[in-house]
Length: 360
Image (tube, rainbow, N blue to C red; front, side):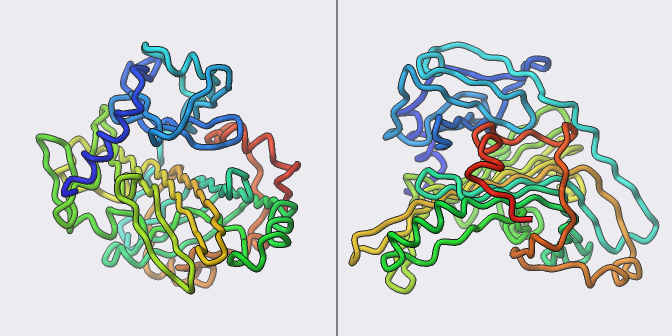
């Protein structure tokens, strides 16, 4: 159990298919493609070589079922189960040409301001219950990068009220109060501004070690650097007990992409952040009442611009900022989605305005 990451890969290899996914222009492997079944269930991913793995060995891929292959940077495509299990190399084209991140330098740069598009959604017991996306800004002090403030500029917010009300009516006495938990990515979980200096990099194997355990890896793609962290997996489940409830974290992973980073041993600058993707999956149970609930949270952030401001400029807008990950979604202006922003999964898009109701 010393090497969690290797155990996770061995576990996944039991469910491995020789199907590889690469970029149609560069032929480089596409990392962190998500594979989603017809019910919106996350069933697998691609690794740093672009190879497809099932999330765990218990997942059964039905030959006649359809599966969505999702990555916000690429055109969406569906496979039948039989196609997904066939060996071979498949090429995907970029969905949109995302403008290069604009970095605006100033002489007085006390704060780094990272602006971009976020997307978050939550699934309870295989049913999407909440979705939000919009524009957010992160304000990062150069001298204390752990103290990040945010400004939610615009957003959309959808909730499956029908499912939540029905669930509480049936299970109210057996479970905690079910409420949506979608928000922009919370920078307290961002690695570079928090724990990076406490991590060790094994350059030869491109592995990342934290507290004597391998928790991730990294890959270079041209000038981009992709870092993957796996905090929990089916071979490394974390259990906690609170108020008679047991929470088992089954999957918890984080990926961060940076530009202008040719070597991980060089100093990584948070101003070079391109995107962040986080997946969290836990099961909360009450054994006395024989009841459990599965919770999944997906979060993405894509940088559109970076600029720097002085302390004086920061003071003029600080009343708009917060360091919490809870927002009043009715305050920001309405976000209008356009093709310049990354795509959202088809199964979520098809539910907006239907089972997922606009709350703004």
